[in-house]
Image 1 (tube, protein in one colour):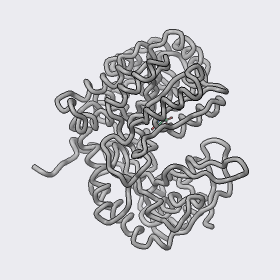
Image 2 (spheres, helix red, strand yellow):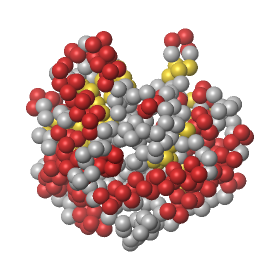
Image 3 (tube, helix red, strand yellow):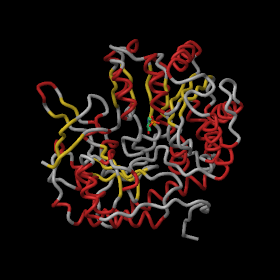
Length: 456
Ligand SMILES: *Cc1c(COP(=O)(O)O)cnc(C)c1O
């Protein structure tokens, strides 16, 4: 059979708000043209993020009831720890309330002024947490990874030549660790190959620099390896994930992604001395070692989520659903980042609106229009998120101008995908009418969350 279908049926439904186009123009203006300020009851389809927006399974809901709310030594924690150890093999595992808390624990103990943290591409909160300590966050994406229009199997790979050069330049003693983000969220949800992970480890080993995975979407990455990399077709997702983690010395994870639940995260390491520092930091800021800022029932939902995410029929549905949206847009002539990644379709705003220069944020203008047209919320991933002001006030654009349509896990159906594609195709037809934008207010860190805008 050619038809692919959702490998689940629906037990509970949630009504979605339907609003009028004229009203949406007002809501957007009242939200300072930043979709982050929109109230969710004004949104028909929410593609702002796939983070913590997963629909849980009946087994996860049942597991919540089984949560052991003990402050210390909860049996729910040990379930959580066991499944994560089974997948990752790491010696020490600490829960956190979400991914950025794991990042804060990691970088407040390893970062600081004069230190350099390397990555294929740092996610925004990762970069934020590194820079907050005074350290420098540097990206080493391959040339093809910077090109939204070029097809490649592993566009999330790190550039090993550039990485080596940089290590030689700044000195290994100033590099507490190197990360690989799997899949590479900021770079289009593109996977990293097993070969690239292995070679990164080999290179770093020579310098004594540890490798950490930012493994929010480790299962989606493993699925791409299974489909695209030689030698992995007959391996299970779990075996592939285990091999990925075997090259790393630790990881941070936002379990709001491939943990298949609504909140949670963890940090893991094989380093005993570092683990002692993590523990102190966690207890001071997050909570005790066996809950780390989470309700213990959340650990139950996550323990079950980590089992479900390894199911290949789920991953096939997941990746195919994202691809189907991408294919509909490509058929309509809409420029998107190709190939589609694991969790989102990224519109290529630079090609969508070439008449709007990067300093007028084409991605933001498109995201606003998508809301007005169809009540759909998306997210700019371009110069608002990653643009900078250099010396003498000069504007430095991001590598790519993108709009991310992140697909929540197990939430929307195929007809929702058709509606989204239709809405964006309509905008694309009248794209020349879209106007540039300017920032009227911004925060010093992670400005995209709270910045306010106007049309120029
Ligand atoms: C979501 C995400 C994070 C941060 O996790 P939160 O749970 O949102 O704090 C870090 N890295 C990547 C790659 C992510 O996608």
